[in-house]
Image 1 (cartoon, rainbow, N blue to C red):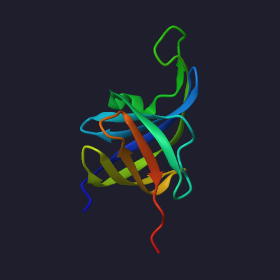
Image 2: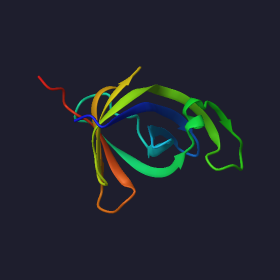
Image 3: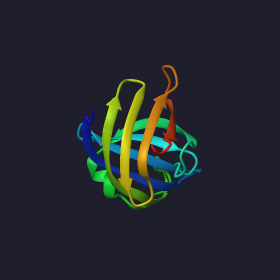
Length: 127
């Protein structure tokens, strides 16, 4: 059963280390995860996704340079954006469908027990 929908953005963030900020619009904020490697395009690929603080909705369109000496200093560019629909949500699991420019299809975020570390997985296509 589909529960909610909204916008998503993935920002390529060249800070101290290159990573991707994966953000879902939920409850009037951007729920956010830092993904150290490029988000999965192919089914079955798993990526670590570290939960970080929520960001304001206004950040969904942000591209630019965060100044040196500031948290997250570096270059931010939008890598992908679009909409999503949640299929299932619980404290430790979030199943959703992305409709973006690069990422499309069913995905799941699974939390490691009581941790900020999650797995972001592109689900296999249904035949």
